[in-house]
Image (cartoon, rainbow, N blue to C red; front, side, top):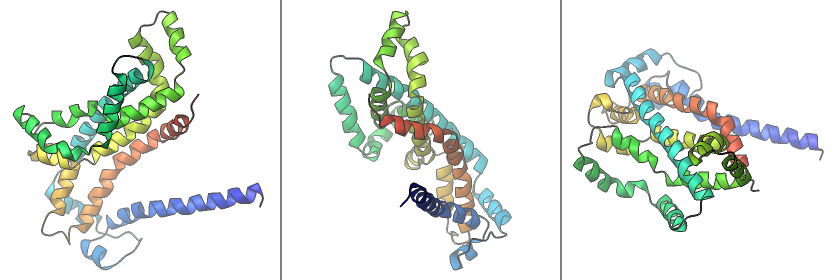
Length: 275
């Protein structure tokens, strides 16, 4: 079999897989324009005429623009804190040699294996004791500590950052903070972008922690608002409105992925090569 035929078969397989992956998104968009009764009784890929009614139903439960802004604020803050402080920690663990480094690294690996839900009750007690309930601070500040991101960026730094470059910068008189911001961060950018998109999606979709900590409707994130609609007694007629809300909620994620996709691909490929 010639190379051209192999490439043709590969491209056809990739196109088929892409269509299969995009079908759920297409179905979501189509159902956002149909009524709840139509969704429950039939299947089609042809858009309906109920998008205005679905929008009115959704607007009767909550202000989706406020939910989008609340979720976006929390997700962006968490992403920035996770990216910067995880990169700083990963750089220190990868480059510097100090007493207790192995213990710290092993502790990070252990914390990666512990589900976050196990500490939820203790976390709530701590937040309540600090009178920070119904506040965005306990939803944002813990993003500074992200074991999985630190682990990934440490491995990425070991694979991509030449130590000779750091030595040259030190000889030229650059201090460690300047080296990190001017040399290390640009080199780590693909790896940071790779983890940042995951952090953004995780924070955007976070439902349990905001549900426990927030009780003012004006501070609710979009997942909580969507949950209130799904919990209503009239869920059958609300199916179209739920699909419309979900379709709107995934747009920021798709935009973020579109802007970061090239960094994600380069980050994954670079992380697989070690000098």
